[in-house]
Amino acid sequence: MADEKFTRCPGCNTIFRVTEPQLALRAGQVRCGHCHTVFNGVASLVSLAPQQHPQRSEPDYDDPSLGPPTVTLRNAQALEPAPEPDVDQRVEPAIVAPIRKEGAVDDPESDYASRFSWQEKRERPRVPSWIFGMSVPVLVLLFAGQALFHFRDAIAAHWPKTKPMLIKLCAAAGCQVRALQDVAGLSIEASDLQADPAHKGLLILSATIRNRAPYPLAYPYIELTLSDTQDQPVVRRAFAPGEYLSGAADPAIGIAGNTELQVKLFIDASATTQAGYQVYLFYP
Image 1: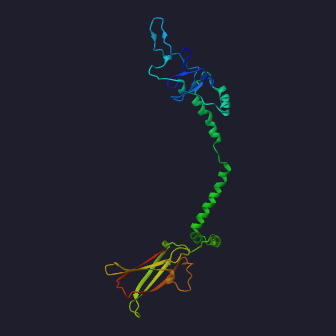
Image 2: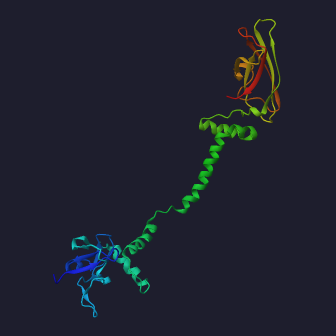
Image 3: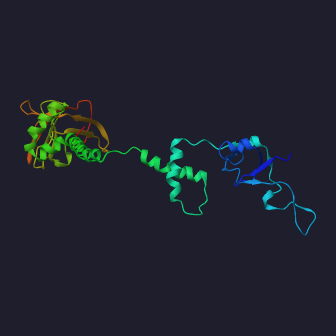
């Protein structure tokens, strides 16, 4: 038909058959249905009529304006109208356009990305700086409170003046301040295991436990192991502080610093035969 018009996509060189109403819908702005490039359909109009060279009588089908011969000719339905810009998009090009360099080539997709990149940065929520300023001392206090809770026994042992305050804090928090458990500060200075001459099968264990620390330490558990002639364990038993302390001793106070504790235990070994023993201190 004589009034047929054709436009070429600058992105993929696909040629489309277009109509006047289609080009007038967005002032010539269309979008390729093949590669989705937005371009001016009026400025990209091409003619598919063969052109004659003055020197040759045959039509020239190698004219670059006709496009590569392998490019498919698409109809007008494959060409989409460019999307209608909203109010913000209309205002934004009006602000950006005056500062473009002369001769710059318009790229609708890059314009769209650059147009809204600053809006994303502007709309990104920002945490006020005063929140960071207040969070630091709060975190320090929480850390100090947690350390105070976990190391309250050690703090009270090394700094006895803090013990009344720690006891009050524990009363409110539902915890207790006890003597520090530090088995490295304890040692067995001497021990002896003898048969009771007055009672057959009864053994008497005597031991001296020394607290080498300058502060009180909790009473330890005493583990006694009886062994045979091959030094193999025959029987093993652990004694809690309540089993070897006298009634006048307070288990919560512990062994005073730089002092010794004399321990005497009576053990029924009538059902075993032993040739040796070992004594060990530990905290459960």
